[in-house]
Length: 429
Picture (tube, rainbow, N blue to C red):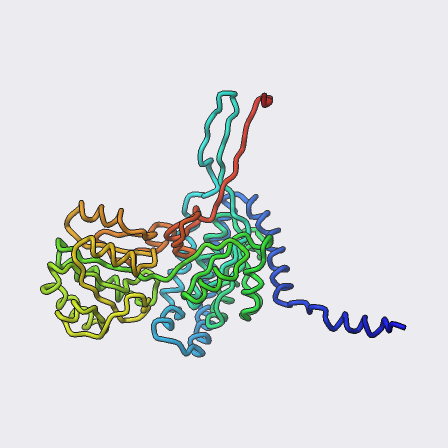
């Protein structure tokens, strides 16, 4: 006789346990989906009101935000550059609030049709913008990213689930509390902008496999995070790659401009993704200009590391052209003209941001056409690759892929479109 009880016991032992992270994610995503429907139907004024209220709440709760950040910084054991990313100060809190207000002041990305045309049969076809839906934002270190992402998503009618790094958890929660105040003040649900209930990596895994619950994942952080997201995601990803950015000093560069631009591009903030990581300098001017540039950077506390040609001019350690330093270290390469610079960037770049300094407009145009970067600059610091500097108020990241969006991602880049077809009784023959 078969013992059914023994078989039943074995069945229960083999049953897969419920994943608490998947359960928590589903609950958050379902609330976000409902909130996205409310938000998508809200007027531009109501969405803008939420942002203005949120900015006021950030200022009003500045002490609580700084106290949370102080806890995060006290527990942090990483590098000085990443510590700077994590650190909030009163001016940075004010800049965060001001950025949210700037997003509110932008044109409504959902407001006007993108295109309209009339077919020979009289049908009027309109391409109209619409929110993507539910955004999953996974980010590291910089707690202000939570405010930027929430503001941009709310402006564009998207709900967002924010998962910051464990190193910024107290800061992130305090900032999200202010965003929630803003939403409530405008009569919108808190679930329009949620923060992950846990910093456990299991919640990230749940986000990455939440097809049908989350519409788009945006990772913002180091190379390992982005690679993991791209490898494991079952949800579309808007990737933010590392910033292996170059500044190229062409033979016709103004030396004074070259010195000012490079100092800013490298040293304004070394830990941001728009920082220059490699200096390329034309062989024609390297003997005269390179020693000056290296001395300038040394005075600012930056170490230069060069290829063989650079080291023959200024003795220095060996460069590592595939390393994103995010620190006061700069790789230096001597190249033979524009073609050499473009070849080096094609080999070592990350399609993020690259700049040329030159007085020759034709060469500049050829450089900008020849790079495959999301952002190219002429006679300006690579640190202008920033949503705020582009007039977006903030950014949700710098997209370096080739589909949907590239460069700083603002509200307009977080919309898609659909069609409205207006007829007068037409039937298809």
